[in-house]
Figure (cartoon, helix red, strand yellow):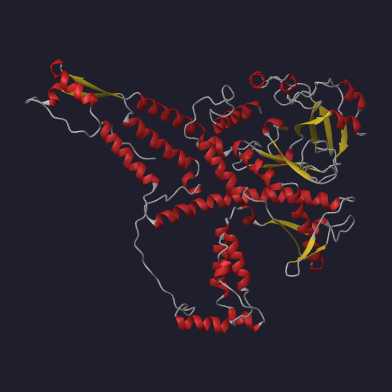
Length: 582
């Protein structure tokens, strides 16, 4: 896996840029001027992990549906308590650079039981993202489900180990005080960076307490988790003869790990990450852009004059911009004074950069459209087709992430199901009364079998939606769905609470004045009165009547079209031949 880690490290360095870490801290091998890697990573995280997902637990057995609702609410509250949305962001970012791996464990299961994490509660379900540098697996396996082992590295305090009865104290005694120096142990560049930025010897050790580095090894065929202390920075070598602890795995049969990948490789667990597809283009475009900038900085404009025109040259030198100057005699100023431009950005170089930029945009999956950077075509129809195609790509990415979240949350919920100690909060809320009734999931309070329930993720719960978008969606539903069926709603005793609607719009649109503009005196017109009044004013047409308006407006040109014209213009001015535009 060393080769994969090296590529990942190189791409992350390009993502960080050459300014990250200050002088000597960056590992970028080139000057990053246009950070496309950072922009694409932001798009993936924003698209796939903007908010906390909502889980919906269903069952085909009618008598179990009330418990399924309580189970759903308890699971969603657990996701909020463990800040699952932050973990999901980390996993998506890891999948962008390599392979996203999450570890799902119980506080007393022997897997990750001694983590130093402010969101970790011992004895309760938890999950965390595992970086590729801290994860190893059976590389001989052709499929994730066929692995003979998987393991992850983490650090914990020696004091925690000394208090745990499951730990072999003889093995613990053999571990030196500096046995866990951290993941950068032996990294000379990191040690030099730390020593150059800190003066305190204690801070330079990078440890606030006596830490020990451990590795949990999951053995699926034996159903065990084996914890070893590590010596050095090699995950393959523990350096000790006996494990620190051996525990039976009492979690789901799939084990403690789950992965997120976007582009799988046949007969291989390691995928092709999205960032790897544009690495060379990103480096090449930045190197070319740097060259064009350097050429532009070397551009010089010098003025030459004949010795007989010294007075004219002096006048020009001292003149202000736009000043009118008098020329004595009948001399031709172009013959005695001339300007010469040397250097400057090559038109061919500029054209090549713009062409490669377009190729990289396409290789990234039409980054401009995914990031919403303006129109992608010169006509609205073409633009809609492009966005429809991009939406299919985004939908595929969201589907992959949703399946991953379903697997993870199902394992978390299985730990909740088998927990015989803890209660998990759930509530019946009645906002109109301002009351919440405790309906917590108590230990031993289970109905049916765990396999009677199906776990689903509401796909749109992970997509960011601005308050103004929520308001627009609400108004659209009212106008297109509820208003046309108001008579039927009223026949069944229903109505639209417009006062509540105004409150929602004032909140989502951040317009508190709406509460003052629309005043309710306690009365409410019937739907027929409201519709009749609108018809009299001509404000609302019958549902069957439709008005089509054709509006001509000036539409901004797409960036691709502008780049294409610029490339051809540069090639003509530079005397080069026209090239096909990517």
